[in-house]
Image (cartoon, rainbow, N blue to C red; front, side):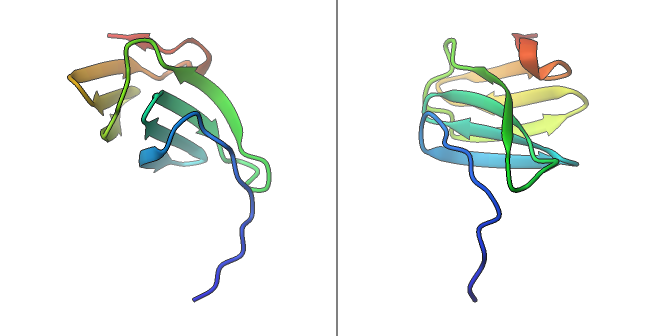
Length: 88
């Protein structure tokens, strides 16, 4: 099966997990957590990124405006405003 790349967005580290909710992607990578707008698949746009104390993320789930991030510990972020991500 051959696919056609519609768009791409470089992240700071290797992406380990991704969750999609509507037109928003939540990415966990080796250097942090990122929220991406996918409403235009040809031009994904970063809405917010948090790297403060979030190294080596390996797991991710998103529920009810909160992101649960697994790495060296479990971190919970409020993602209701991606431009101002904050720990709960």
